[in-house]
Length: 99
Image (tube, rainbow, N blue to C red; front, side, top):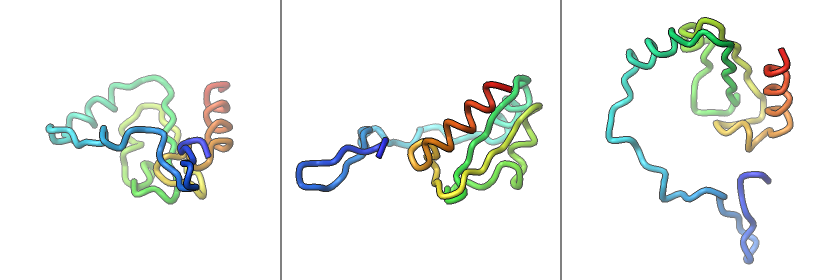
């Protein structure tokens, strides 16, 4: 509902431009990313949809690189939790910011 537009023929299209979905010419350097994550000292919220292709940061170890991270898994949501479960996403974020 929030991430698509309905076309005149009843079909749906994403609200973003699919042509900008390109891969970076640079390889993601896991070791450099982990070093960066270790330096983050502020409270950090990691939100994941349980139907996402991405693994759970609390189970795969990524969450442990942050000094103060909270991991929230949202049911019935894919990789774009804010599109799939907007109300739940807002509830989680507002609770995190209020703490």
